[in-house]
Image (cartoon, rainbow, N blue to C red; front, side):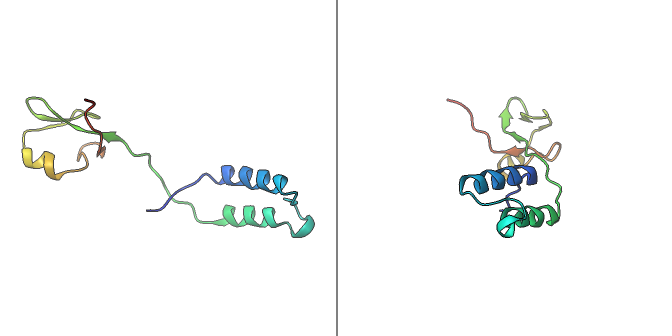
Length: 96
């Protein structure tokens, strides 16, 4: 699975790492950190959406804990790992 990072956070981490090992982030000594920062800034961006999490609540009907959409089908609950209404991933567990 792909992992997405914030480019600004990568740049700050690179600067910190360069300072720790006394390597110039700028153009001196080859500008290693600066070159990596340029490279990471040029990488193609992707749209990333935060994952919503929920669970099927067994009331009179099965209900999504995130958007409260309901269904009366037990097959629906056992075979669907995402709510078709809001897209929430049904991975939350009941606290016992």
